[in-house]
Each structure stands twice: as structure tokens, then as C-alpha cells.
Image (cartoon, rainbow, N blue to C red):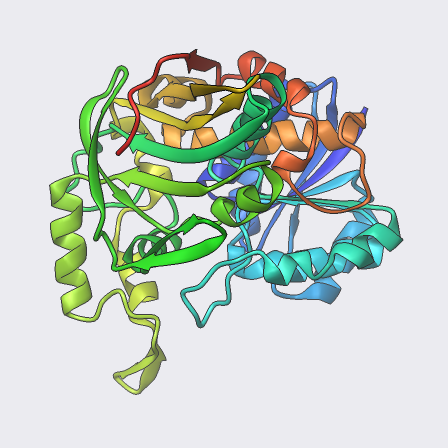
Length: 400
């Protein structure tokens, strides 16, 4: 039915590639492209003889718009799946615009030299994508991504207005290292070391990093400490979900992770400011990334489960209502299926589903959209089919 160009060859890309190859009726052909072509070739080799999907590979620098344009024009995909770095979002969007090809990503753009991420840069493309007659689907991972679909599903089927949303991201996995990150270390550490924030009554409320802590008992994981972070989907959900008074994002962290992170911060290793070392300019955080374990290597040694979802409070037919939608994912089951841990799996599966929505035409609106702006029902059905079944609780424990 369709052809997808997958840009990136990291852990999330590996899941996207495997899931596209499981879904050969939709993804008849895929091209895997990265700056390091050998990584792309390895995925092709590993899947040889195991799928009906025709796989090709290519070398491309995602920071180089003319290279991207050349590749897109040569391959002629129905959709470009961006699972490269968030710094490269705008370059890939520019190339898709020039070639008039649908675009999607899993995380919003952030400048390389500033630890700040928001949707303004990508929302600025709305009119151009609309005029070109193509779609840009933003934030189609789990959070952002599935959390947006959960929100639009709750709005469509359970509420007249949603007043409060708490997004809870719990990783109960154990990889055995004193300190490692479950996705790109550079992105992960920038995210968790930044100031926290949430939206209340239409305004951003800023907090110090890790200032607000809560405890929550997660099904199949247990009691965990979780901390309020800034997260990009708060910005779009506060606009697109009717009735929002407050929306927050919490993520669980173990004490070992926090202790190591604080130590690294104190000695300057999480800084994104360049320094001179032995006559060369380096960025400490990028050096730290080079010495930490590769997140793609954590799959075989990570045990435990994730539990990620949204608690909604609102009104239906004039009566107050609470509702909890969530997914539980097992690290070892993910590794057995696609060779990754659950963090990559929970991001990669929704990315494949989002691309499928665009290729099949179930989601078809020209312009730039966040995921909650589309009909959630076909996506929710696909989650159950493709490895991320959701659960619901009509009487959840609320976060104070």
C-alpha cells in the first residue's frame, strides 16, 4: 500500500523498522536512512527473509536539507518518519515541504544550543504545510503521542469537559547500571535537569528541577517516587482539550539516578556550554553521552515494566467524573519481540501507527497538527493490535 522513509537508526528507529516490517500490508517498502549507513544495513540484514516489506538503506545527513531533498525525491515516500534528533526536526520539515511529502516525528524541536523545547517553531509551519496539501504530525511517540490520543479519546467518549490531567510516566525497569539513560542521554539529561513547569488557569507555573515530588502506587510496578517535569504535550493539550484548568507531567526516578545526576551537574558534566579541552572545543554533555551506556544496549539486561498513562478529572452530563487510561509494557517481552527495551518500544510502536494512519488516509488533514487533533478511535484500536494494549480505571487514585 505505501512507502516510508525512516530517518534515524537508533533504538526507537529499530522498533519502528521492526513494526513496519510486521505490518507489510501497509508498509510494502521502507528506506532506512542515517548518517551512519552501516547501522541501517545491520537492520536490513537482521530482517532479511523475515518480512515481506522491501527494505533499502541510504546515507543522509539530517542537518543537510539539500541531501534530504535529494533522497526524498529519489525514494518518493508517502511519509517521512523522523526518528532522528529533535534538533533536526526543522531541517526535515523543510525538506518535506520542498518535496510535498507527509512528515511525522516523536518529539518537538529544540535548539541545540538551548535547553528549551516548545512547539512554536513547528507550529510556525502550519500555513505552508496547508498550502502544500501535506500533513505534519507532531509528537507521535508515547509521551508526547499516546498521551494525546488518550486525552482525545477521553474527551470524545467520557467527558463533556476535562478540567485536570495528570500524565504519569513510570519506568519500573532495572538495567543493573549505577547510572544510565533509557533513551538518548543528551536529550534525557537536558529534559530532567531543566526547570519543571505545569499549566494552571492558562498560565505556565515554573518550578525548580525536581522540586515537586509525589508518590504513586503503579499497577504491576508498585510504589514509586515521581517528580514534576516540563513536557511538551502540556502545551498542545492545554489548547486542544476542552475545559482544561490544570495539566501536569510526572516521571519516576530512582534515588541512584538522582544522586548520580546531581553529582554530574555539580561538576559541570551536564552543561551544554562549550569548553576547551586539549585545544579542542567540546560540549560536556556530549562527552558524557559518549561514555555512558548506549540506550540501545540496555534491552537484554533490563527487567521490569513501564506504566504510562493519564488521569483525567472532569464533568460528564453535569456530574463530576474521574478516569484513568494507561498502558503497561514489559521490558523483557519487548526485547524478545524486537530486541529493544520498553522505553524505545513504547515510542516506536506509536510512531509506526501514526505513519500507518497517514498512509491509509485515516488521518488526512493538510497542515501541522498535534496528535490529539485527529480522531483517536483508529489509533486506539491499533494500539491493542500492535503491542501496546491499553487499560482503564473508572475509579482511580488521584494525585494531590
